[in-house]
Structures are given as structure tokens and as C-alpha cells.
Image (spheres, one colour):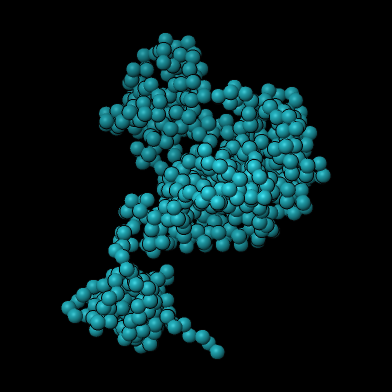
Length: 582
């Protein structure tokens, strides 16, 4: 026996001209009502679309407010020619209402109009997120999210990966960000932690004999919000491969990301293989390890030209330059605004000169250049008539980063970014170690369990700051989608790597007990990465804020305004977990 739904025979978005003459029931939210002299036209909306309902008896709508849920029974008819709306799928038909049943009554004034909720203050949107999500644009982001995750799962299974869930309650470990910690009721004074990532567990799965693992993994970090980072939790396509090299991982990632971006966007997507850019080259050429390759501007190093210069601001400094073609015709206000921006990011000024038709340089810095310097600059920067060369000078640490910010600002102000593309690249060959600016000690640059290039020999013979790691990031349009690494599975190499960063063998045993023990029992070489799902969907939907692609996000102050989290708990709850507030 076929069961007939008492609320609807069709969704609001599926009725077509082929249904004309049929008796139907549709159910949804009453979006608006228009009065046309005794006859009312209502728009009824559900997840699947909108259908117009014609109501000749006004009494049928009595007591029914906008955004109430109703069920309408009636006949499908063709619209009059002058009322056809080709902007919606049901735009050639309408339902003549014979009966209307009120299902869910709106009892209070709406805090905002549903159709314009995106123009409302964000905290109000998040407080009434269940209303905000009725907005078709907002809802569509969540639908795309579901479709992308479904596709990713299918693709990973196609590639032979096994989906395995890892624990949410685990132990705290020094992974970089702050942990969310959970007090134990049964074990007084001890705490669980929410996983910052499934890092340790996915490596243990490789030691356990699983060949290819993946999951759509929730990750929890007590970090401040940014436009591309949600506080609290986020999701990754976490995957790991046994008996795999860096290139094996990058190849899988290329295939998955290329197919995902191609399927869910009409923009041009970088074709595999994606560019591999060493970290050192990225910092020199783009001033960042997250370069936006849609920006055609490049940075050059000209420090050697100014070691003994009489121009004090450049003397013995790291000097970078950016050539901007055809920029000399920009108005004076353009250069003034660029100077204001430079000052706002901590620069003491922004030098530049213009190149005229005879290849003469016009600007205050020119007088400090020799003919040889001018020739060298022209060759290095590829100078041509009409170009402007900008100069950035600072310490070895800050000059590359400042140059990167100037490069981005120039491209944005001159509209040089090609918005029709997704440009992917890998940043590879990260330094294994760096000097902590606060303590002066040698510390890990990224994941401490990465395999150093050159193995034990490099660790024992090289300056730690010269050692590179098998670490890699994938970047799309200037946004880091993922970090990954070939893991250090050899306990001898691990002990030496951690010793350089100031850890003892006891530290390893205590802080990373499970992993250190596991690696004593025949660990395979393994590698992996974890592209961020929220960021992927943010790019695919063209949103500038990551909260727009999360169903129930926290605000930028790490508050859930919908459920009032975080909030106080009772004294009884605190006593149960042995906590006393100070």
C-alpha cells in the first residue's frame, strides 16, 4: 500500500506545466501575500523552491501571519501570460487554493525580514539562526556543504581509502593551539581534551596495519576567530597513507581537490600537477607562504645593491622591490593612499620611482643609484616605460612579510586579481626549525612529527636552521587549505629531532606516550594531510566569511548566541567534576 503524506503530495519546487489540472497538496512557509483587489496571491516556500498560490476567499488566510507554516490543497493551473515569472522553476503555473490548513503559527514579530537577513547585524542573525537559515542564499550554502562532503566521501572511497572514526575525548598534547579541556568525574583532578586534529590517532592507524584512512574530522582549537577561521570547531578531510611519499600524498590531494572545485564551481581550476613552490622561494617572490597566484606581481630582492648606500633608510637592510607595469599614470592620490597603507602596517615609508618613455627614473631614490645600479634594476625587475618600482626596506625578518602585504594591496587597488580562477599551489620544503622570538630557543616550525629531509644525518651534521622538513601546505587563491607532512616514524630520528628542540626522551614518553610506544613495533613510512572543508566551501560559494558556510557557527567572540554557550553551570555540576571556581 502506498502511503499518502497528509501535508503534501508535491514539494513547492517540483510542480510544472505537466501537473496542470491535478489536485495537489503543498506545504511550506508563507513568504508573502499580495492583494490584487479581492484576490490574494501568496508565495509558499520550502527547501526545494517557491510556488504561487491563488486565494479567492480571503477568509482562508485569516489569522495566518507571514512565515507561518501551512498546507494548501488545490488545483494546478497555468498562470496568465502577464504573470509568468521565468526567474523561478514554477513560474508558469500556480495553485488555486481550495483549502488552507495552519500548521505552525507565528506568534511574535519577526526579528528581521527573512529575504534580507544577510543585511542584518550578525549577532542578531546568529541569535535567530533558525530564521536566518530560511533565507534561500544562506540555506544554499549549507546544501552545497552537504553535497561537497558527500562527494568527498565518495571520491575517497573510490581511491581506496577506508573511513574510520577517531576519539573525540582524548588527552591534551602540545600541538600549538590551546586545547579545550574537559574535567573527569571519575578521575579527580584529571582532564580529557578535545582533539585539535586526529593527528596521533591517524598515525596509530597506520601502525595498526590500515593502508589508507580518511574521515570528515571535527577539530577543536581554542583560537581567536578570523574571516577564514571559525573559533571552537572546524572540519577537515583528514587522510593518511601507509608506505607513501610526499608525492603520493600530493597526487591524491590534487585529484580530489581538482575534481571537487571543478564539479562545484564554474571557475577555471588549476589542472594537476599543481605548482610546487619551495617555502624560501615563496617568501622571496610573494612575501608569504600563502601566495595568491592570481596576483601577477612578483617581489625581487635587491638588498645587495644597498649594503653601503648613502641612502640611510636602505643601508644594510633587507630591501625588496615590486615592479608594477603601466602604473605611472595613476593619480597622486593613489601613491598617497599606498603610503598611508604602508604606514598602517608598520613601515616607515614607501619609496618608489616612475619610469618614463626614455627609461629615465623619476623619484627621490634615483639619485642614490649608480648607472650600474639602474641597469641591474632594469634587468632584475624587467622595467619598461610606464612602470613604477616600489621599494620595501626593513629587517631580514620583517621585510619579506611587509613586501607581501604591499604586493597584495597594490593588486587589490589596481584590480589585478583574476576572480574567474581558482589558482592552486603547494608550498614545500618548510624549515624544520626556527628561533623563538621570545625565548631565543630553537623550536619546531610546524608539526614536530614531520620527517626531516636527510634523516638522522641531517640532524647530526647540519645547522638546525638549515634543515628542511617533508612538510607541505596547499594554497588556493591566497588561502591555506591544508597542511601535511611525511611523518617521522623512526624513533632514533625522532629522539634526535626532539632533542634539538629541547625535549628529552622522558618528555617524549610522557607527552606522546601512545605514538612513541607504537613506533617501537614496526611502524610503516606514512604521510598525509587534511584539507579544511569549511575553507573549501567558503571558496566554492564565494563567501568572504567562514561563518556563512557553517549551519550553527559561533560569533567572532567564540559565543554561541543561539544556545547561550558558554554559560555558567550549577554548583552541583562543578562538585561532580571536582572543580571550585576562583
